[in-house]
Length: 468
Image (cartoon, rainbow, N blue to C red; front, side):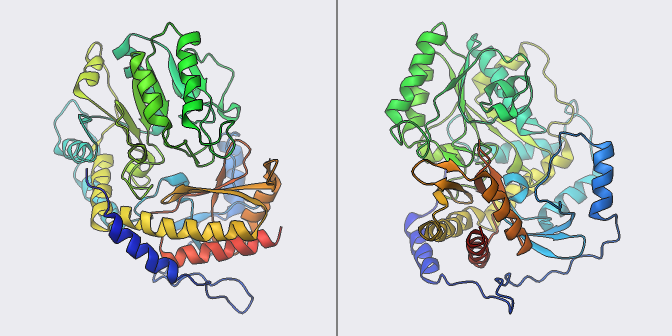
């Protein structure tokens, strides 16, 4: 698998860092958003207030929104979003790390439109070249013998299927996941998820949650060997000694952009495989070039999983997910009938193939590495200025900033982050938040995010934090 040339990237990053300068400001002292050649279409639909009323009456009461006055987003183009009044916003969240090529990328839109005009849906009971072409292209991005693809409609579905396959293949039931993880909201994946915020009181059997190897909040800092002892103890004291598998993100997304400690995954994989288990890499958020240095998050740890799950960036916003595994593991689903009506339909797979082509053609992985490194460096500069920033972490365009009211105690700044987000929105920047305490900025922009966008983002955040 081809990786980026380190020397050329370092040279380019050095030039960018040297060129760093404060963003141009308006007469009101607010940073000026980078110029962008796009005029949004006129909007004559319902207002934000009308939509909010209808949403409250007809949609699930479990839905929530950012901001005291929720935004009505009606159009998107590349790394920018537009509200009902035509105001432009820099999107630093990308629909929860989903829009990788940029909003409404013409190549992706054209691929979907062409396919919709020809064949929107049939079934995998008939042959169609689109699903096979996309599966082949996707398999080429993975190492080793990971080349059999099962298409799903979401990340939750993909993780559910991966857990099922691990249990069938091994004949064991026990799954090990990490505390603070998020893997989905269905029966099996809710069990693997390890945050009470996302778990309902329903049966979630056969899952053990290991101590999270969190370099910032973890009990052992970055000491991977101490963390992995808990995996071994779970195997010895919580199971028969044989397990079905281990599922982990390389960077916990919902958990607050937490990178697992260096060296942890190789050790954990070794323990699990000795206990007969399969290793599952959840790449729903970190995959598809987002980490910059590699195409997949697990590659940054030098491991090769037995099963890889993916969604979000795979379709740039299309409801699409996938599980990729080896031919041997894939055979387990032939024991009974396995079927997914919409998984791999021509419309979604045509869009997915276009996404892979855009990532390659526009060198978006390189951009994620170069601009992401530059942005992280500038954010660390903010950390030196603002005491409320406890940690800056992540890689590429999967970055996190944890806000704390006390750096020694690491007291979560829950209210402060909400105020900062409001200030940033008022200045034209949209960013996510997450983490168990809800005090971490989740910075996961489209991969076409530029150095000028990074400068604007940092200047806006600087002002927002200064107002707290």
